[in-house]
Length: 275
Image 1 (cartoon, helix red, strand yellow):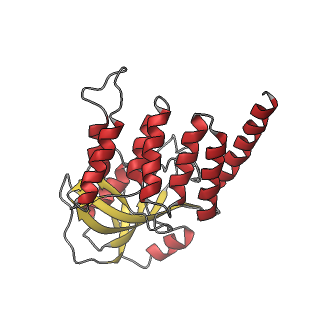
Image 2 (cartoon, rainbow, N blue to C red; image 1 turned 45 degrees about the vertical axis):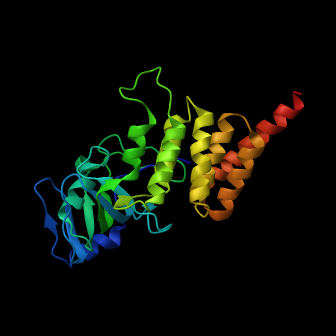
Image 3 (cartoon, helix red, strand yellow; image 1 turned 180 degrees about the vertical axis):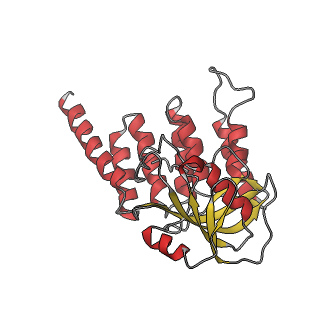
C-alpha cells in the first residue's frame, strides 16, 4: 500500500477548538491559526533544509485521518516545497526544533474544493475541509534520502523510453547505509515511493525495490503490503497473498490487505479452474 504523504499534521477535533480558546492563538496573514503546546530550544529551519516532524491529523468532526506517532514514522521534507500543502509548509517554517503546536489549516491552505481521495488505509478528506494538525518539529537534516534516490533512478533528461537504473539505486542506498545515512533523513517511505514510481511500467524492477524495503524494515506492515501489490501486478497470487497476510499480522487494522487477500484468492481459484 502506497503511503500517501498527506502534507499535513496533528489531531485536534472539536475539543481542540475549545482548548484553543485557552491559549494565545495566532492568526497569520495567510489565515493559518496556531498555538504552541510546547516550546523547544532548537533552531528554526533554513530554506532548503529537511524538516523532520511528527503529526496527527483530524477533521472538525473529530475524524482522525493519520497519525505518524502510531508507527513512530515521522515525515521528512525539504522546505519550502510544492510537495506539501501550503499550510504545512508555513507551519514548519514557523517552528523551532522541539516546538509542538496545534495548527488550524483553512481549505485555502489545504486541499480546497477538491478534497483528497481515500488511499489504502487512509480515509478521504472532503472538499472545503478545515484541517486540524498537532505538529512537532523533532529534527532538521541536511538532505533527504528519497530525493537522492529519485535523481538516480533515471538518466536525465527523462523521456518515455527511459529505463530505470534500479541496480544503481540499490547500490546507492547501500553505500549511504554504510555511512549510516549521515545527516540524512530516511524512512520506510523512501524505497516504497521508488517502488511505486516503477510499479506500473516496470513491475519486476519495483519488486526488487520492495524486497529491499522488507529487508530493511521487517517490522513495518506497510512494506509487506507494497510487496504484495508488486506480486499482484505480475499475477503471482501465492506470493501476493503471503505478503498481504504478513502485513495484516503486523497491522491488523490494514483493511486494504484484507480486501486484497480476498481478491487474490478469488483470482487464484479462477486461474486454477481455467487450467
